[in-house]
Length: 219
Image (cartoon, rainbow, N blue to C red; front, side, top):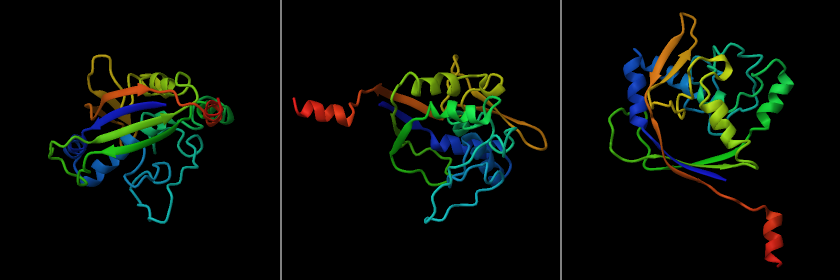
């Protein structure tokens, strides 16, 4: 199991997009392009221009691919956080091979928030520490979690990009701002994103299987 404590500058994130773009709608859209989903959780592949919201009775649809519906990253950019961490069927020449490759890297992740939630859209810091306790279960940390970090999150050439790391959790060697290119019909937008997520600690743990625990219980 992998654990990370990730402190999040939510007010700074809101402020950056509100100051960078002219309208609240454009700011929300560009923030969603950075993440790869809308605040409701709806994928940009399903709704690239606005957040349709999600009724409480519905689950977030997660059975979609990128290759057929968004091959050029015009809906969900190649550099977006969620597309990097699960490229699904979009990499390589063969759809089935791409899916198999991505599935070998899958992890079971769970996050629990700490600190009070910041009101939606607030840009003024309230000096309350908040963020995420990140937990990740995988069979092989090197083949799964560390591969995601090294080959997808911090790979500046991911999916044919040039000097672009994950816009949220990527780390530049000199700790400089992260660049991100967002394709748009009127021309690509390039963002220079400061650090909004700060790793405060973490550890690797061994969790024995249920069969191993049962075996030990009968010794």
